Image (cartoon, rainbow, N blue to C red; front, top):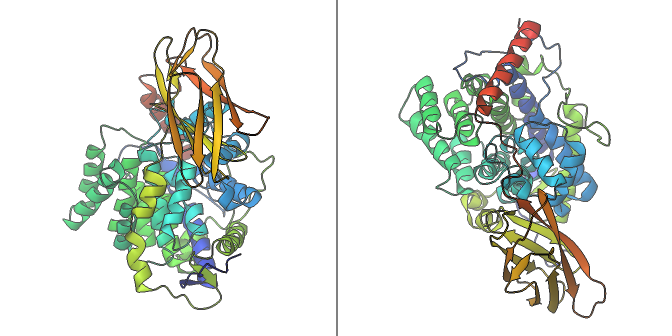
Length: 517
């Protein structure tokens, strides 16, 4: 099958790789446990070690939970068969955490707004928040030393409940973590991560600001305040500010594991996420064998879950089990795609030429940056069909909703595909409700429509789209969702952020009474 493919000349030693994967999950548990009691606090903290009585039990953390779902999805479906829609189905069935963008994602999917619509619609408050970049380690571990591949799967993941900056945040963390399997210098890893996201995005702005502040010799607390001020327009619990805190932890920690996770926690805000991501990256760089025992012993190797449905899930119970399952899947993946760096029993051997190309942005720009946040993709037996709405599927009676129908990757050299919108009574389509599209293999064909709704009686209207391949008698009927503008609200009320802060303050007080030494 691979006779014409030249296997990668890049080699990663199996024992070293396993140690780094184990270190990744251990660092994730350490940072998440350290930061959990301080989550939601807006003031500067003064943390130097765990404040809980742990007894070998880490704090449960959704940062890790959701990655266990993605691991099972990849094992059951095959990694290269994963799509945003498939992950959306696993979301609905396996993820019970109702918080913020998680709840928006599930509500959108059950109403027919599959990813990426589930992340871009009805999600103004949380679309740039932290729920995606905190779960990027799974893709880094499955694609060690291959940040472009990690970026592509980070997109498939993050578009479920985010768009824009929320997606760029996970692409950034996934690519730095993937590269950390072959690069140990933090500044080089930051350079690689920045090359994989648009240079004018807010994530890049926060990362660059953190680096500038550190290089100027700015005191840590002053640097933290500068990150807060620069992101004040976005507010708290948003990715750009918290990614900035991750950078401060890594830079000012200067490679010291304990100091780095504590500094990330001391920045405040989404502390379990920032400390866990710092811990995971340093865990990859140092391996489990290089992490301080004083940080490992209090939490042991258990995995505690909080946000996933135990029924139908075969979630690993320990970090050892999680590591072995990830290693097994990574080995399967490299057999499917031999151009990836190969994990072998021999010595690690990564060429300087390969390392130099890790900052190339062309592949990620093509695979990720240009994807529409408003495209609903359907897999047909003979092609892919996408409905790309202008500014999403919200509609009002009498107002045109422009959209494109895109047919790509047809199986046949040249195909004629007929489409016909079966519009409700009183609805119109311009230039008409049907079209015949000539599609050629290897290219995408696009045709534009304007749908003009008539009376709308429900929050969601599902318009049948009949698709027929020329020469076939059986049509395929797709359901194209439209949402009545203003009829669906998932964002919190005007004081919702304040109410959210009150929730965290109350939770932290309860934790303090129960657990603080």
